Amino acid sequence: MASTPQATTHLPPLGTHLREEVGNELQGILAELVDLSLLGKQLHWSVVGPHFRPLHLMLDEFVGSWRELADVIAERAVAIGYYPDGQARAVVSSSTLQPVIQGPLPDQVVVADLTTRLEIVAEHARERMDHLAELDAASQDAVIEVVRALEEQLWMIRVQIIE
Image 1 (cartoon, rainbow, N blue to C red):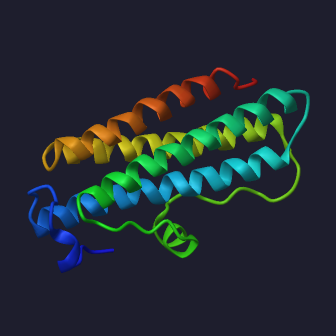
Image 2 (cartoon, rainbow, N blue to C red):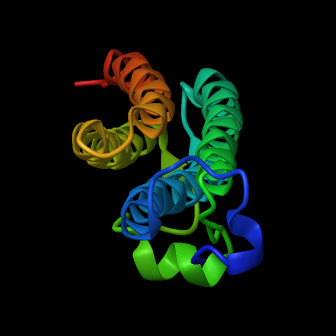
């Protein structure tokens, strides 16, 4: 994951220590976005109930967005000379998200599960965004894009909570 001597030409002038610190923040966001996209697909396949269709379609949109956001974060990491790891083992070892239950899930459960996980990822991304403000504004800008998208999605899913 660290930068290599051959890959350090034409890198932003962050310095090795700062590059690693920024890269580690980006890696954390990447892992949670990849995990969220996998969990979202699982929920997409598992949802049942009267709100199946709109949730099924919304989950597809969200998963696509999370994959695009993960790409933005990974590409920013590479741009600063940090090589991120989006492989399953890296995601499992660093994501804090709990797995979802396998099998059919009522639409209310899907909404609640998704809301909880989305809140966690948005909160962690916001914390990393604040920390990156002290380290690298360009990397913070990439994370701001993630926070905006996640908080908008969180609003969209929260309004569907069926009481």
